[in-house]
Figure 1 (cartoon, rainbow, N blue to C red):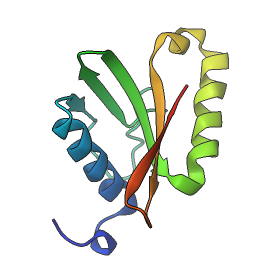
Figure 2 (figure 1 turned 90 degrees about the vertical axis):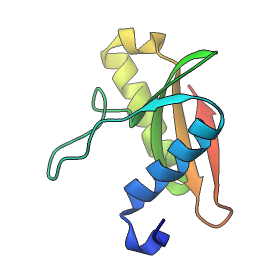
Figure 3 (figure 1 turned 90 degrees about the horizontal axis):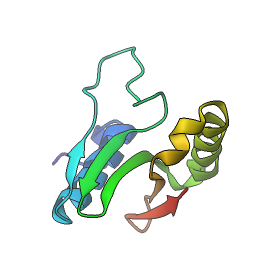
Length: 105
């Protein structure tokens, strides 16, 4: 894999998350990237993950943007209460420790 600085930040974070999830035995899906188009699922999530515990809907971001993404999901749930049924998570990537902080909503 090319060094992180050569990849777009979003792509790099997604690659890291997908590798971790697949190592855990999860089935992972994300929409194909299309230039100049929003690629979020329901305008919120980046990944859909299925494992023995069920389905998780994950928003990926940097560690510094976790609170913004959390608010984005919570505001969407206020507008569309059906989203509350989803197992939503925000994964914040810490580039210094090379780890994710996982927040369940």
